[in-house]
Amino acid sequence: MVTLTSRNKKWSAEKLQADPDFVICTPEYLVRQFRAIENVKQWDRIARLSLPKVAGPMPSRVEKSPIFSDHFRLSGFPWDHVLVDEAHVAKNVVSGIHEALKALDYRRILLISGTFVKNTWVDVWCILRLMPRQPFQSTETFFRVFGTLDE
Amino acid sequence: MTIRLHQHQRTAVRKLRRIMDHPNGFGGAILGDTMGLGKTVQEITTCLSPEGTSYRNLVVAPASTIPIWQAQLREHFKPVGSCYTFYGKGRLSSGAHIFSPGPSTNCGHVDVPEQKMVR
Image (cartoon, rainbow over all chains, first blue to last red; front, top):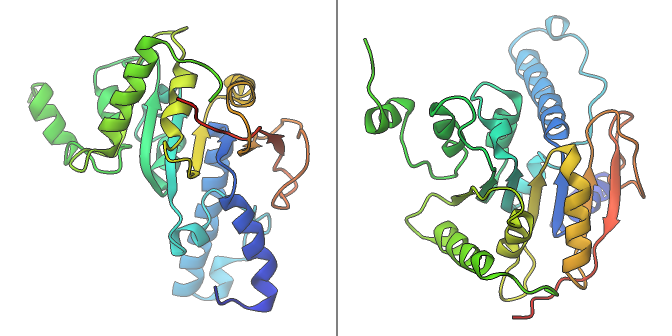
């Protein structure tokens, strides 16, 4: 691995993250980390496109985000398994936890829940969307297979 | 692994592995057992590799079930293996800090005894 001397510490710290067999976190933690990364990315986009004055100062409270780190993606270390306990928390497509889970880089996902269909049968589609290779190409496909579309 | 799985758990683990590793599959599986059938143990067993090489697993679980996860990992999987826990905002950290967390990041550290699968 070739890196600057000043980055050595960061690399070794992130390598530490590569070692544990199990990392447990709460959905709230995941969402917060995801939002922090997104804020920095957005600031970066604005700063590149416009004058620095428009973008304002860089988000100061940049949290270290080991779970969403680009280093893993770049060095080819995706998560082998992501286990989502009580997977019905991610049943809403526009919710933060759903987006945060989608943004993770993983090979396999295991979704566990005792109550999958909590409100409507469409909840199933939202949970199936989390799989790396999706069974259905789009929401329309899912509706065509399992339901009828009313005009 | 130091526990013996029940028949239905063994069947589930076998099926989950087959579904997740299928080349034409979707890379994921859904486990929808009801309460009390031992979902956590099945998940953990599914995520351990039979060859003994270590996988990197991320568990996303509500805060109320995190102690159960830690206890299950500690109790049933011996020896090796390490496990880090990150809590959401407002929780006190337990144990050593890893990865120099920010002011609002709390993370705890739990040592899980070495994992070893004995069939």
